Image (cartoon, rainbow, N blue to C red; front, side, top):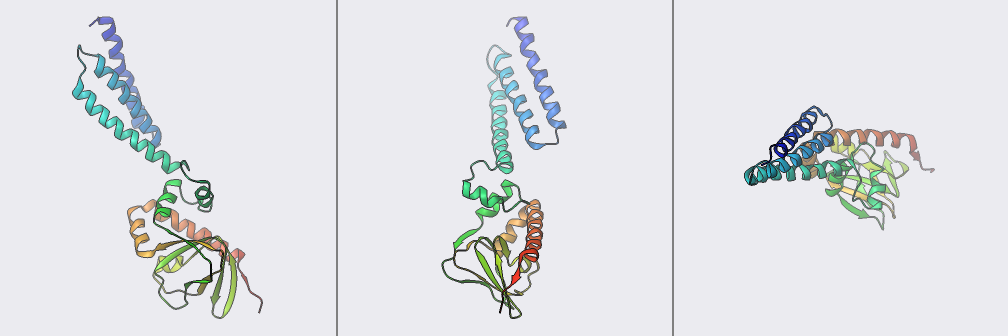
Length: 222
């Protein structure tokens, strides 16, 4: 191998080291992975050209690591962007400002979609609540201690019972035309135990929803 070519190829190792070095200093996960991927590409080129025959063992192992890193870069991008969301799903995501796109995708994946065509009772006062609902279109009638209130979407139903395990404090009925996301409470709790960040984000979303309920609810005239 020409010594000048060998010297130029050797520079790739130092360039890869620079990418690795700044990658380890990066606090942002996406930037870290992009820098490490760049270093992997340089190492692959180096291992292919440094000897008279390619160093296939090193090339194979680094290629596998690079592919795994590339896959995780895709995961991080999906976590941070609305890429691949339909317009309808993206519009629904806008109602969850406390969640990242990735957190919203996981939450939506575990939900069941309901289109209400006739009055549908969601909770009865004094009874256990085994589900959580999010009404993103339409209206709800809330009956608490004999006083009815009409509330327009969007809003959660059953979130206090979901968080505390208490029985429903009011009877809630979804009006025809409402569109709802429904979660099994036990399954959703299992999902939240797997991700503390999703748990915190959803609690923040509950708090924002509670403020909206207090601000916009109005008793129905007798």
